[in-house]
Image (cartoon, rainbow, N blue to C red; front, top):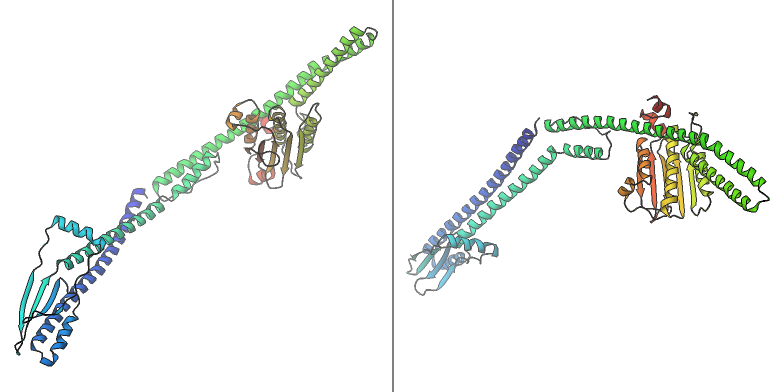
Length: 472
């Protein structure tokens, strides 16, 4: 069903309903006008009857009839006066019209502006009684009464039109809102796409144009989901290749430099013994031996950074809790260290895949390096918690200087981009908050949440292991 047809059909139904309501109001207004005309005619008939009775009534009932004429109220479009023809005494008259209300004065001004006001017309005659007494009856037209009725009619018509317009607008608003209600679901789905969540799907819709949009968005979501999954697998493969390259470089450094540095230290130790009696030469050899020791320690630290945290041939689970504890302890024991390191690890009995465990280790390694190099912090806290059936939460926070701009920090070589890439590759979410370990600024808190491996397996979500990456 096309959208234009739906809107036209609803608009026609709404217009018909509003027209029926207006017709009912018009009938009610016509009923009021007919009743007002009847009352006016009845007043004239009653006045005529009273005047006819005044002419023929006996002397004893004359004052009663004059009193009845005094009770005459407002006459429709007429003013009535009864005078004694001999003395000119005013015996009875209709009630005078009230002053026009403020709302009516602009109408009267416009009426007088576009139409010349008519002068009041007067009609009078004498009533002669049999006893010789005469009365003068005067009827004068009252244009203000007609003007008041015209003003009331205009106000009534305007009110009906306003009510009709209001009802029409409300009904059209409801119809359009109801017709475009599926757009809210479409906008919500587009918002999910902006957050890179391509799992949302739109159902079939009754309106043809929106159904076309929904099918196009579903197709786009499927294509983007496949592309995102391919990118994620490629990113995992690149990370695995990076780890393999690190291990290769570490082995090469160990094989090429390890033995050479060990031989150099052995030679320096031999020279130390042979130059014991030559103080100047002994001092030079001792300095050489210390330099060799420092270089060897630096090489060991570099090998620890580059190499895998466990044997590369071991495909079993990585003891991530022990490795993170050892990593934090190594930072505590570094010479000249002034940062207080805190660690919280609670993984329970969850079997974390090797690739994810290695990612958590590298993220912790990179985050602690950033704290030591850039944060100027006094405290750093590492937290790694997992619950069965829930997300794996990883966080590193410090009370240092924080980061001015996250976008600039992600583009610089401070490791945040690598951490974000690792989190994204494993289907997690990363947040960077301006809060330290105590929850208050200044500082920086990196928080990452990964889907629980058990939940992934239960939901049938794909899980990338090292052996799968190497098989690709």
